[in-house]
Length: 468
Image 1: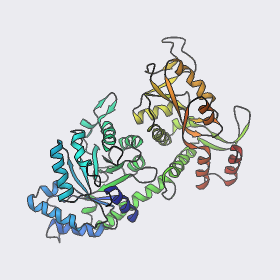
Image 2 (image 1 turned 90 degrees about the horizontal axis):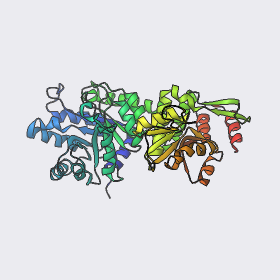
Image 3 (image 1 turned 45 degrees about the vertical axis):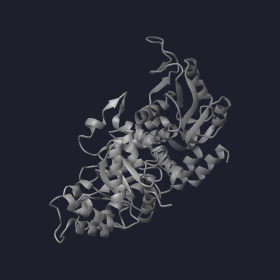
Image 4 (image 1 turned 90 degrees about the vertical axis):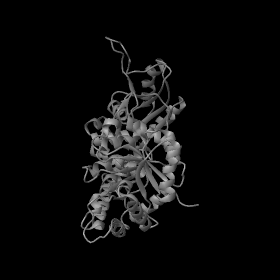
């Protein structure tokens, strides 16, 4: 069976150690000296960058504008792209089903593109003909990089902007298969928001360079925990550089340097990379400290975790919120309920990131005004997820649940950032609740030790304190 576009993309990235997408957009009147045709110019660019570009993205508009000669040039350019480098045809197609099917046949059957950019404005039946080609890829326009994008894409209903609704629809349309989103580099906060809700989705990111997008900001916002998930497109910056290969290689190296810096170590897969990044940010924020601390119980501990400090460190708080959002993605609920006090800024950050409504139980009912013990909007019978900073035993979680359950709310899941592995999960399970934790305290300590941020002796003392 032939490889899918996504498999070919993964192989190309691995071969070239690159997330660079080279846009093939020949602007009218900008044919460099020494070339007799557009196809000759683009052939030279492809030949120069084929060992650096993980994917090419010709914009069909620049070829269609030249009529039949332009379309013949596009065919000729596509024929010269190496077979192991996939192609995204940037055509932004979208129409009623029969017309969309015709667009799909043109892009995939005639031109042989591996993937296509698609406009979602017509809804599911306008996207389905493109997704029907299981071996091809689709990148749905979500939050584009142009200045006036917000006039339409930021329009909100019930507090949910249209671009976030599009991302949710795209996942549903894909039916569990891979689908990509076009996310402009000029809006890194939107990229972070959609990444939190779409952990595995590939983002095609225009807008770095000429449009002013900040590369590091968009990589910080959009990279997955494995250091992948983002394709950084550059068109003019590479095409019209004095040395296109040098420009492409410089962008690749800059991306890789940022990736390594964000992960704090050579790129690695999945949860290990996420734990390293989170551990480093928590340590730098002073949320994790080593020494000799007296706990509330009177016992001594070689480690102290204070996640209340997250409120003063936005980057660490954002990373924590993304970790919570990943845990929440597979759960069913109507509200998140944050426990005062440490979880209130965390819950707020998660709510802003995911769009989920938040409520919180007061430690004591108000003695004036509404005399409420639960703040926020809710109704009996709604399902909640209890959110806290960390868990040792389950006692404080069970105590916080009492007024929530008394108000008729339903809870089955508790979500925390750190599990200290001191019986909390088992305690909750005995009462019928499931615990979900982003990381364990052992994982935090192991990550900090591997990066040289904590001594082997301190790490050993913590492990001994934790029982192993």
